Structures are given as C-alpha cells and as structure tokens.
Image 1 (cartoon, rainbow, N blue to C red):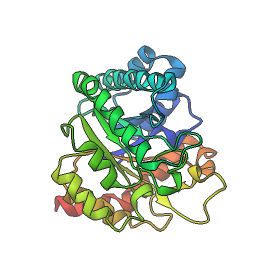
Image 2 (cartoon, rainbow, N blue to C red):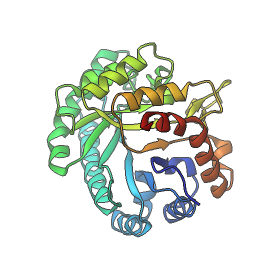
Image 3 (cartoon, rainbow, N blue to C red):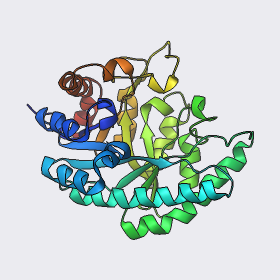
Image 4 (tube, helix red, strand yellow):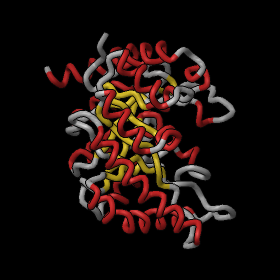
Length: 291
C-alpha cells in the first residue's frame, strides 16, 4: 500500500494512539511523512521518540505546537518563553532524526486573551515581542517558527492571530526561514483575503506548513473538535490547494483532524480514509500543477 508522496498525517488525527503505534499505522499505510505533537513525544521522552522516529523512516513535516505567549511580563510569561525554547530544540532533534526531506518547522499558536483582558492589540503586540525574543534561538537551531492563524471563534481563548495577513505582518521583521506561517484550510477558508494572502505568503517565502481538513455545521459543543476529513464539508479545499501550489509551496501537506468520531475509529481505518480523502480533494490539484 502507498499514499500520495506529499501526504502527511498529523498524529493528532490518531489522538488515542501511543507514539510508536501512530508511526506504525502510518508506515503500514504507506505514508512517507508525519506531523508530530509534543505531548506524545514527552510521554516517552525526546531521546526515545527521536530513535523511534528515525526507525520509522518517516520524514517530519511539522512539530505541533507551542506559542501561548500573550500574557503580560510575569513569571508565567518567562515560563512560556522557556517552554518555547525547549520546543524549538525538540523540533531540531526530531527533524534531524527524520528521513531526508524533513522540515524543522515548529507550529506556533499565539494564545488567547489573558484573563480579564479585552485588549486584543496589546495581546498581539506581545506575540510580536515573543517572536523577537525567540527568533535568535530558532535561527541558531535551524528551526522555522510557523505562526498559525486560527479561526476568529478562537480569538478569546486560543489565538489572537486570526488571519493570514496578521500572521504575515508578525513574521515580516524576521528572515523567512526563521519565521513563517502555517496555512490551515479549517482556519482561513472564511476569509475573503485568504487566496490573496496565500499568494503574498508565497512571494515572501513564508509558507512553512500547509494543513488541510474540512468544516461542517453544526459545530460540536466543543468547537475545537469540529474538523472533518477533506471533502466532507464546505471548504473549497481544491481552490486553496491550487493557491498554495501557485504560491510556490512544494512541501508536505498535513491532514490534521480533531473529531471525536474520527478518534474513536480504528486507527487503520483513519489512515485509509485520510489517504482516500486526500486523493479526492487535494491530489488532483497537485497533479494539475505538475501537468
């Protein structure tokens, strides 16, 4: 069995699979790349995770995630900055352990409004300050920080960065190989400027990661878990894929799904369905670009 060579499955799609089992599922289904999460890595330790990842033969598309640094200066903020430095080092280690073509990309989620605050501009300014503090460490480690804008419904509690334009503006002061952006169809599909900003990201060389999944309503009570297989919702994933390809993105494309029904399914079935959805929704646009 094999899958499209640019398909990567983020291990969050196999939420309940332990680290080694998630790698085995992907290699057994013919995947060539994986997006990893820090929590499963921490569960077995970085050294063991890197060894197992090396043995898998998979390449790394991204490590998810860190960030969460919108709070004012405080011991909590210092702890967050330190945790981001650790995440940068983990990204470098796991990328070095991955197969040829691995990308040392750390996905950053900005964080929401600090408790009791209504100051969105202030929170975004503190994201900029955090990037300035972390960029030298990332550059030294050979890691790209990929700022991920999240849908505005998450602005209060998860990400005050809601559009690609905002993410690109935050990245602009830094070299493109140090700070880029994550383009996630679930989070940007609604934005009238999405395609124009994908083109801008391409011109600036800042598309560090491209993630795909779909949006369908009604959303669940926990809106974090409203992500679906590509093609099962309303997003024009083909058009956004074409925009990314036209913008020059040539890296792995991650399918990242948070969905209780998907998580409850057999892991091999999730791997199969993910590959089938990718072939139907994403691969034709890649083939058209090649042609």
